[in-house]
Amino acid sequence: MRRYEASTFLLIEEVARELRASLPTVRNWIRLGKLTSYKIGKRRLIKKEDLEEFLNRSRKEAKPASNDGKKSTLIRSVERGV
Image (cartoon, rainbow, N blue to C red; front, side, top):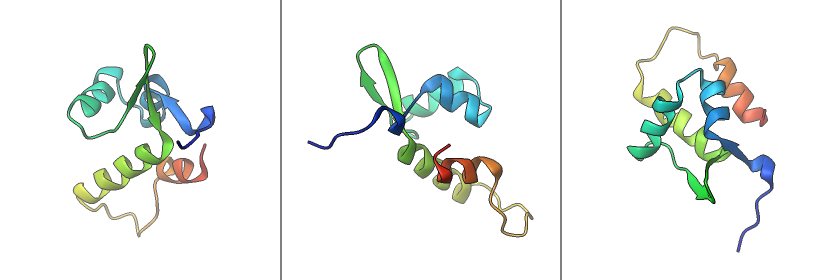
């Protein structure tokens, strides 16, 4: 069995704050299967790598913006593990 550190996971509230999205929006992404989460006890947790995959998929689905290929601040912070 693979072991994870607590810092590997984020609470739904933390994801919502990082993405500047509402809690119902994050829960909806989970319900629709767009964002993978894990129920541990009464908490629903999201692995940082699953969040990064979700953001990469979302970025590919979105219209390309003319940002000269620069990554968003959020993408950079997730990649750094912040």
